[in-house]
Length: 145
Image (cartoon, rainbow, N blue to C red; front, top):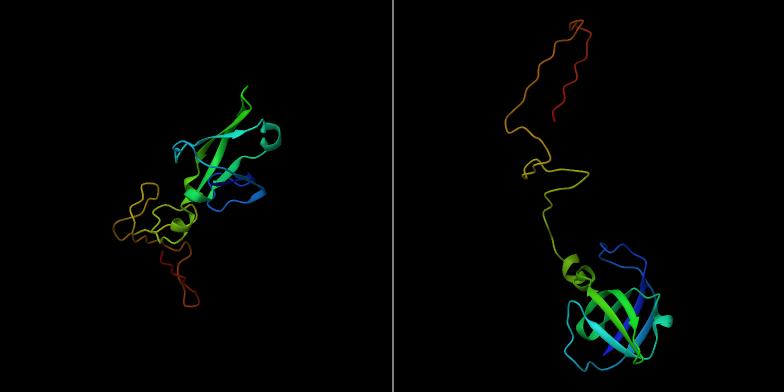
């Protein structure tokens, strides 16, 4: 099993992460590994050398993880605790999906139900009189929307 450690400078809510400083660790899983919150023990006190890494990828499981802590104990073992990054782990599946968005900060669809946007369910006609009246030389602009 190969574990690749990275430094992640991207937002955790971003699907595509910017990963730098790759470090590979090879080993064998002796115990069953939790797929969501793995705890990995590495021989040696390596906290000082891998302490800056905050992201890892286990290629055999096709999963990406945020490293929550790296600690060392008195038995010369370093423990890496992590939590699954579901956005990066399911990136290809997510990016291939088509969706209808019901909420967007820049635009809206009046045909979709949205509690935050008020729209009329009936025709709304507003008639306003011109203050000076309309003469033969006047241009009238009408808008709909």
